[in-house]
Structure formats: structure tokens, C-alpha cells
Amino acid sequence: MSPSSSAGIAPTSSFGLLRQPREVLYGAGQRAALAPMVLALGNQVVLVTDERMAGDPFFNDVVVALRRRGARVTVFDQVTPDLPVGDVDAAVAHVRSSEASDPEVVVGIGGGSCIDLAKVLALVLRHGGSPRDYYGEFAVPGPTIPVVAVPTTAGTGSEVTPVAVLSDPEAVMKVGISSPYLIPHTAVIDPVLTGSCPSGLSAASGADALSHLVESFTAIRHEPTSELYQERVFVGKGALTDAYARYGLELVGRSLRTCVHTGGEGPHRDDMAMAALCGGFALGTAGTAVAHAFQYPIGALTHTAHGVGVGCLLPYAMAFNAEARPEETSEIGRLLGAGENVTPQGAVRAVADLLSDIGIPATLADLGVTYDQLDEIAENGLRARRLVQNNPVPLGAVEARELVELAFTGKLP
Ligand SMILES: NC(=O)c1ccc[n+]([C@@H]2O[C@H](COP(=O)([O-])OP(=O)(O)OC[C@H]3O[C@@H](n4cnc5c(N)ncnc54)[C@H](O)[C@@H]3O)[C@@H](O)[C@H]2O)c1
Ligand SMILES: [Fe+2]
Image 1: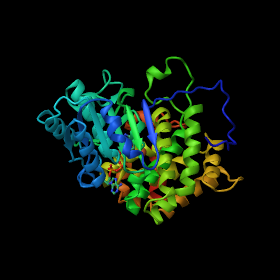
Image 2: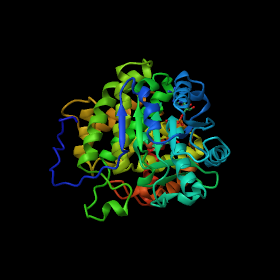
Image 3: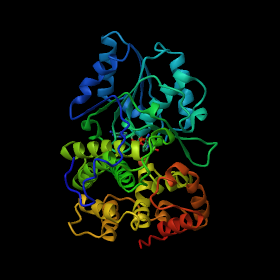
């Protein structure tokens, strides 16, 4: 972990909680360990991915290696981005009529959408019903089929988080299933798998990782009662999540621009895969806040990629929260390389500049939002209560409307 901190090293008496997979394997080349790790969990295996990855030689190698060792393997390769709830129904039906109809392990290989489908599939196959039965927090009744998560983007951190996000045509916004039972059993993070990400995808997923790190580092801090971990899936910032956020922010400062502008494989991909993992650890326990809350209705209205929307909102959310989190906000600037004496306002500017350099639109208007949609966005964003409640500054209707207006006009205070 990074020793640099002027918000101070947290006293060891402060609150800490981590919720994590049983095993996390990280590093270039570690994808070779995937087949043996999967087989250690069982012989009936479902692999979840999308059409792009299904045609990748690595994916084929995994299937061959599993079958050679006697596994019964079913592949579902029809995941669509942003995970429509219908994909889950299709995957359940496909598995039920396949050679691994009673799987012992579900493997998600791909971006956040593939990993989230693996999580929800493992839940529905074990507990029945439909994904809608589990929306919200703590609605999952017990352990799911073990999930092994293999990310191919450096962004969501879903490989280690207790949440899956779906698009439901019956809901105005994206919906989440949040439960500690949704944390994958094993995560295998091989940065080489992100080397094929085109510039726009590196930018969107990198902006998502940055938003997870910033929002968990500046999140609310709760009174650390011994009931807290049972009352909330996301418990606010603490000593351990801060440590992950600091490390991740330094890596983003060092390598996000290179991932977007140079691409290919290399140490910059290692950095961003680790940054995204740190973001997952931080958000998976602390939680994210208003940038994520308002992206829910904006994504539904504009079909903007998740990372592009949260990235666009992030500087405005930071500016809104800077007074409540001045030390953390300055420290974010320092960790991103904006200089030792950076002010909170300077740190917000540094984040806005970084996002602009990687091509994230600066305003909601640039995302295609129209002025007459702002009331609806403010109203619906507030409905993402678990995210809004995680913000360090309380938000009512007036503040929500102010925030979206600022993000629309592009006026950073
Ligand atoms: N569960 C969580 O903790 C969590 C956190 C944040 C976001 N999310 C969700 O994750 C989803 C976004 O995930 P994402 O940003 O990883 O994108 P994605 O999974 O939606 O994939 C986007 C596109 O990128 C392609 N792609 C993936 N890896 C690639 C690679 N290595 N090379 C080339 N193309 C590649 C995919 O084929 C797809 O077309 C959203 O639904 C979002 O809400 C979940
Ligand atoms: Fe996110």
C-alpha cells in the first residue's frame, strides 16, 4: 500500500471491514491457472461470456483444458453489454437443457456484463425464481453456486464486489442485486486479457475505476457499531478501503492516459488492472455515491456506457462533496500527480483534466441529455437510495437538481 497520506495514516482503532473473494490471483500469465482453479471447485462447469470472447483463442484453450481433464462444460456466449435481465433468463434456460445442467461452478469471462451475468446465473440456478426476486440489498437467501470471475476490462471491479447490475425494461433505471453472497469465490486477473481493449473502452472502464476509487475514498463514514455490517452491504469508508483507494489512485495517475492513448499490452495495463481491482475492493465494502446514482437514469435515457456517464458526473460530485471531504479531495489530487500543495479545487480540476484527456464528455449536454430531462434525472437519481445515502453530504430534491444543473452546464464551482 502507498505510504503517502496527508489525510494521515488511520489510527488502528478506526473501523475496518473487508468483504472479498476466497482467492484472488493477479498478474500477467495467471490466466494459465484458470482451468485447475475451476476444476478444484467441481466437474460440471458453465462458462459465461460474449460472442467476442467466445472467438478468442484463450477462451477456446480454457474449454479444451477443462474437457481434457474430464469436465462437463456448457458455454453461454450471448451476453450483451449492460446486461438486460432477459440475458439471465436465456442463460438459465440454456444451462438447464445442457450437459452441465446442474453446475458446480460458474465462470464469468469478459467485461463487467459477463461477470455480472455469471453472478446472477449462479444465484438463480441455486435458489430459483427470477432475478427480480433479488433486487435490492440482502435479498439473496444463502450462498450461490461458486463463481470464478475473469475480467477482460480494467474498470468495474465486479470480480471482487458483492453486487451485480442489470438493465430491466420494467424499471426506469438500472437495478442492482447486492449481497455478500454475490462475491465471486475466486478472481483471476490477468492484465494481458485487457490488452485488446480499444481506446474508447479503456477510457470508459478506466473512468469507472477512477470513480469507484474516488467515491469510496470520499464516502460517508458511519458510526462503527457492531451491527453495521449486518445492516448494510456497503458500510462507508474505513481504514482498509482507504488503503486500497490510495494505491489504486496512484496507479490511475500513472497509467490511465497511456492505456487510452497507446493501448496494446504493457506495464500500463498491469497498473490499470490492479487499479480496477483496488477500486472493486474499495467500493465492494465502502460503496459508491452520487456520481453512480445519477448515472442510473442518465444511462437509461442516453444509453451512455456506464463508465462514460459516471466519469462525466465525477468532477461535479467531487466539487459538491469537497467541503465535507477537503483532506481526501486534496489527497486524490496528490495521488493523481497534481502536486504536493494541490487544493481541493485544484484536485477537482485535475480529475476533470484527466477525464477530458481520455475523451470523457465534460457535460451532460455533451452526453445527449436535454435541459427538460434534468428534473426527471434529479428525481430518479435520488431513488438510488443506497448510493445517495452513501454520499458524505446529504442530498434532497433541491441539491440533486442543483448538481445535475451544474453537470449539464459544465460549471465547476
Ligand atoms: N458488479 C459490479 O461491481 C459493477 C461495477 C461497475 C459496473 N458494473 C456494470 O458492468 C457493466 C460494464 O462493464 P464493462 O465496462 O466491463 O463493459 P461490458 O462488459 O459491458 O463490455 C463492453 C464491451 O467491451 C467488449 N470487451 C470486453 N473486454 C474486451 C477486450 N479485452 N477487448 C476488446 N473488447 C472487449 C465486450 O465484448 C463488450 O462489447 C455495466 O453493466 C455496469 O453497470 C458492475
Ligand atoms: Fe461503476
